[in-house]
Image (cartoon, rainbow, N blue to C red):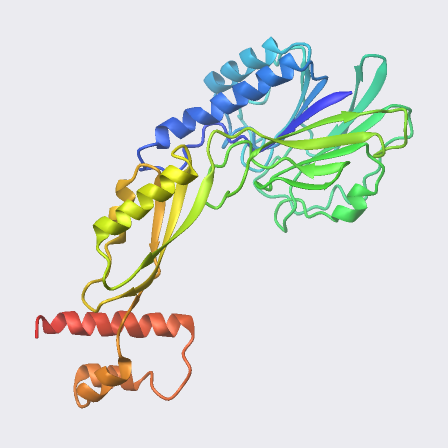
Length: 358
């Protein structure tokens, strides 16, 4: 039996609102799903497992109509869908009463349900559930075991943190399922050949770093559960979020920094999105304007972690009996943590600015 496992597609999301590429990213989520469905059809995949958060919130009829048209086109592949904590089944949700194509099975129960289907002559038992609220703290998978009937047994789960179905991963992995398809965690993670998080199909947040895509696998039911399962991660996302660090010195100018950033983007890929962390030291009164890095369309966020190149002891000795000296006195004689050092620096800078040019 050949299968594909995707999760956390978040159709309808608009990543990084306010950035030039945001509207395009919203459509890219759909385009990537479309490519995966075409792959399923071309490879004659028996089952496609979608383990929650297919939509970023409850879908509207127009979105469901678009999705169903695509799913119907891959009629040779059976599609199993569960709802996650983002697209949970609340009253009036478009999922209720949806006329899915014949090849689609939506596991809409809040408790784990089981469906029996076939791949060729092999019986395939699918276990899964959907969220009916934003949160679910019940450990509903920990004690779950597959039935004893001959065939292939698959569990579809969504969660893994304290507020979203906590899991004992070892117990679930050793329960006896041929494969456990997990969703909710956006970074892909393969525990073993028989259990994995597919991760988000496309990254939707700058914290979603690293590759994103889906799991592709094959199960031979002629051997004990797990031993006949082979899986691999397939990168499919159109972009990545890439953390990048730049260094500032008192001698540097913003034009130079922008040139360095342009070179880094050219080398790492113009299609990707970058979160910039600017480090180093700056000359007092010449703090770098990190906002100018956001002029690059590929930059989604820029953080200024630079520190002023002050001689604090010299400033203190020159300003005793004045407001600045009294301010610095409060920090003397003890070791400062990072937050205190930052507070001291911002305070000094503010007090120096109130003086105006000397």
